[in-house]
Length: 94
Image 1: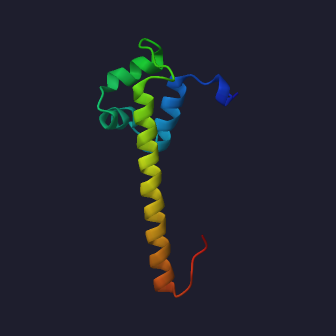
Image 2 (image 1 turned 135 degrees about the vertical axis):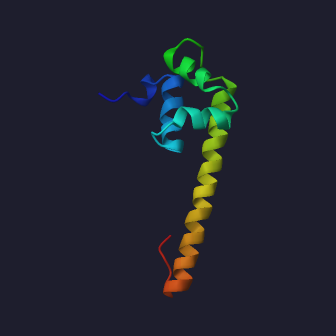
């Protein structure tokens, strides 16, 4: 049964967001690179060997990564929309 959002640990959220940002293929290594930490650190957070709580700075960095990705995706969407509208001669829904 899926966990309710209130039941998730910081490590659960880290894993969920990491998979969303990087896909299921080697997300830990890619996230570690972007957070400028070792992959082993992520593995230790996930296993509970290292503490990771809501006040940990890595989660602030993760939020910044997610926000940056959202901005990049929005720009890509807008560029594609504009290109399609120009090249199809019709506006694409917003």
